[in-house]
Image 1: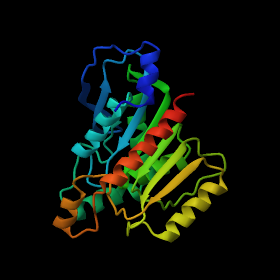
Image 2: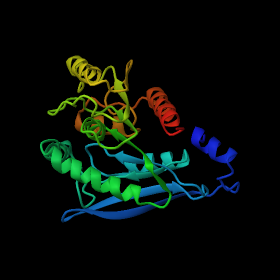
Image 3: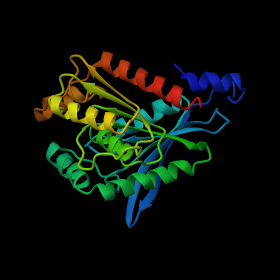
Length: 263
């Protein structure tokens, strides 16, 4: 199903009635001396420029799941860039490696910000993107990253975090958060504590941020990823896919984007 943005473009006569397939391609960019390997997706039936969305991967690294979300966003009428936060397209095959890779960046947030900005610059330069309309979504580790970028005041219009981490070592300053924020959290996610939610809300309220946090009943960690059960069983982790919550949280993200990018 196409989003509100597709409907608007149809009315405006900016979509070719002969629908073309989503175009997806690997892209390379750099952060200092590190080669980053991303994936860009868009629908080439749309002739007008459109909002761009960054997709930040789970702690496993830039993999097919992140790319699938980029394609889904392209189907909704956006140009989406699945970013590479680890560099060289590096992926983890075991939770120990995933924890190491993500931990290195979580401990070096200036580097994480630089890598995010490199992807942001690439996305803004795309000919299919309206450079003044940019959003970001993230999953697990990536959810924490997009929230951190919003707290740091990056020029983002909207941010959606799915089962992402909430804590930060640098709470936002008043007026710094420019993005509208949506947080989809699993109420039964053991990695997100009630106290962390309380602190997050207090920080957001304290700086006047425009945000919504939804606790989805019964949902566990990684509830949007169809492979979550497989990972959970293989590594003994409390992960579980929840189709109902996946659908509901994705619809909530679409509603946010439709409101923000209709301006």
